[in-house]
Length: 93
Image 1: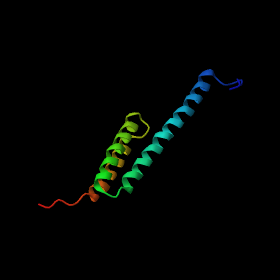
Image 2: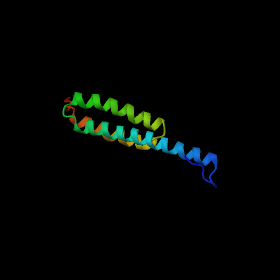
Image 3: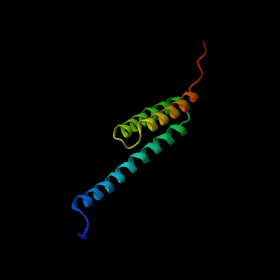
Image 4: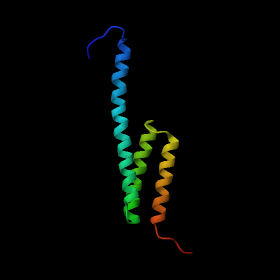
């Protein structure tokens, strides 16, 4: 990157860091969307539960690393749980 007058060295470094973070965060969010779609597309309850476990793991890690907000992670997990519970056969008493 060519040095331009009027730009602090720290601002240039912050800019480079923000680009790297943006790419990393975008990759994580794409991965979340992929696994959400896999859970939604699952046909059987077993397949859905396996995808749900992986999706939960990815969503929790994203929330822990502040890629998404904790409440958003909770909403995603609740919505996916509802979908998987509908697929499971109803238990009779």
